[in-house]
Every structure is written in C-alpha cells, then in structure tokens.
Length: 234
Image 1: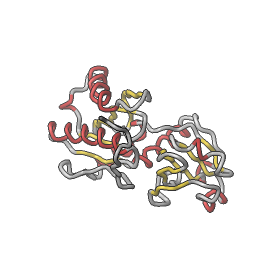
Image 2 (image 1 turned 90 degrees about the vertical axis):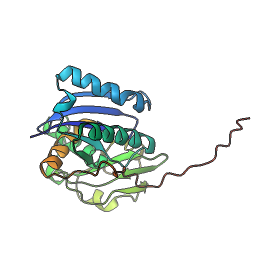
Image 3 (image 1 turned 120 degrees about the horizontal axis):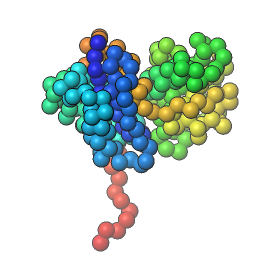
C-alpha cells in the first residue's frame, strides 16, 4: 500500500492532503482567493511536519488533472511534477470530476448526505466555467463514469433524460447557479478537495497507472485563449 501526496488546485480552493492506503491522514485547505502558488508549498510542508512523514517516505504524488481553472491546474501540476522529478517517484493524474463524485460517495457513507435509493442516484459534479457554463460529467454511486466530461451551458433541458429516471444530485462550485434551472435535481454541499483523490489515487497506484512526468499536461477541456487587454498601460 502507498503513501501519496494529493494536490487539488483546479478551482478557488487550494487543497493538499497526505493519504495512506487510500485514507486521508491530514489535510490543508483554503478558499481565500487564488493564491495557490503561494499556498501549495506551504501546505505541503505543514503536512509533513504535522504527520512526521518525510518527503522520502512519499510513494507517489497525485494531482487533480482537471478540468478546471487554467492557472490553478498549471500551478498544481507544475508543483506535483517538480516533486516527482526531485524525489524520483511516480505521478498520478486524477480526474477532478471523479474526485468530486468520490467525495459525495464518502459523505453518503459517513451519513453526511441522506438521499433515498442511493444505489440508483446519478451523481453530477459541476465545476464552474463562468456564467451558466460548467465542466461536468455523470457518474453512478460506484464512481463509474456514465458520460464523457463535457462543457455544458446549462438550461432547463440539460441532462433532462438523467433527471427523469430517479435521483439526480448536482454539486461542486458550479452547481448552485444551476439548481433553479434543473428541475428535480438535488443540490448537495460537496466542494472540490484533495480528500476525494485518496481512494482513486490508491487504485491508480496499485494498477501502476502513472503519468509521464516530463510530458503530462492538465486536461483543460477547452483551449486557453489569450486576449489583448483594453486597458491603456501608457
């Protein structure tokens, strides 16, 4: 079994955790703006000090690979790749939507979430992409993907087929704005966190599903577009 550093920086939340055997040992998180570049290293150092785990004790680094914020993903992936290169350990990329679905399942198991007929509920994590657009995917409650990841501009027809057939739960930092539009959808209080990566990262480690440290890139889903500022600098 493995000791894995888990990093999730794809949204406004900067979250770092240390997991062992698929369970989070300690966690550091902040939702105070997008100062991820300044926090991710500090949080990692604090976790090492708190747990007594040394960098050389880490078997792998897992990072949320997206979709999500372009800048946030770059920060997390760059930091993770640097650690993996320096420590000569594997890199694991974890789907950010799957990690969100994993948190929902763990919260149900812990009694935090209460929904009838849980086995037939469809889970729909939503990562904010501005206005009424979200990055999203549908899962069952075993965290098996039922759709591909997509960018959706949400209206009353979005996921209408899924919402007809029983419980449909939406969550993530893009879900609240969609709740009034999606009839019969249940809004859950589940937000991005490195704790949703622990079991998924452990599974990937056991299966030796590692990324190429040199060439791995985040899954942006949409191309990053550089625009010219309209502000006059001089």
